[in-house]
Every structure is written in structure tokens, then in C-alpha cells.
Image 1 (spheres, helix red, strand yellow):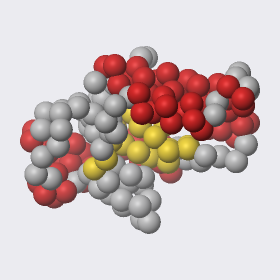
Image 2: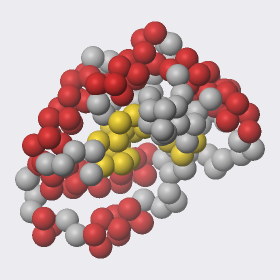
Image 3: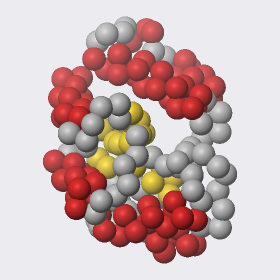
Image 4: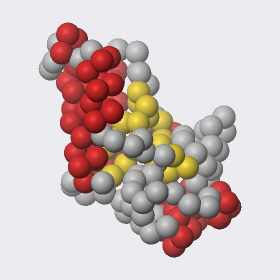
Amino acid sequence: AAAMLRGMEALLVKIVGWLTGAASAQAITSEALTADAQALGVPIPMLWKCTAATVAATASVRPGWVFLGNEPEYSGQSNTTSHDFKLGVDAWTAKFGYQSLLPGIHVTDGGLDWFNKLLVQEHCPFREVWHVHIYEHSGAAWRATWNKLLKFANGFGSGIKIVVSECA
């Protein structure tokens, strides 16, 4: 799991470097990104809606990392309250005991508010790795959103690793 996380982190550094202009577009090709992703090994599965009920219905998973939740703050996505999500995290940990990645919010004010409720009001167990979604239409907007996310994360301590599992 640690090697996979380091590989994902290296891949993200390449993507962020390209988006921020620190690397040339020629250095990042779809073939290179595909090769990097394949080198990570087995894909990381996602529990799209993280609730106690969906965890109970999950028969088994392979040990390791799992993305928990897909934009739970949106009614058009997994539409999960922070309270129900917290109960899902508790059920997941009790049933499988695996490390997980918290949750796939869309990095917007609404997504960060939802995540803050999960971590502060619901006292969701802290995880050292988060997975998020960033959708922006320019490098400058992407950087601004990334910086907003880093500022938010720093409010919960240092050393949090962030995986951008969806981006544009």
C-alpha cells in the first residue's frame, strides 16, 4: 500500500507540475500517464456511497486502500449526509479494518463545508490521506482551488496527503 501511495503521489506531482506550468506539456503524455498508472498495480476500488447499509451489503474487498464516497455533498452523486457517511466509515473500519481514503468531495465551498462537518461535527476518525475531485477550466483556477484545499487541510494538521482522483 505504501509503494502504491508513493506511486500515486509521483503521478500527481507530474500532473500538478504540468497544470501549474512547472513541467512542459511534452513531458506529460497520455502514454506516460497510462504507464505510470499501470505501474501502480491493481486499481483502487471505490465504495460510491459510504453508509452503514452499503458497507453491510459489501461482502468482501481485497486488503488495502479504498476510495470512500463519490461527491457525497451532491444530490446528483452519492448524496450522503456527513452523519451517514461517518456511520459508514465506522462500519467499514469495524468490518474490514483497512486503511481508506476520505471522501471524494468536489473541492468547492460546499464540498469543503460538508467535509468540515464530517471531520469536526461528526468527529470522523482522522485519515492521513484524502481523495478529492478538482474541476477547473484553466491552470490559474486549478491552482487557486488547489491552494484553497491546502489551506483547508492545514487546518487539520500537517502531513496530510491528498490524492486528486478526478480532475479536469
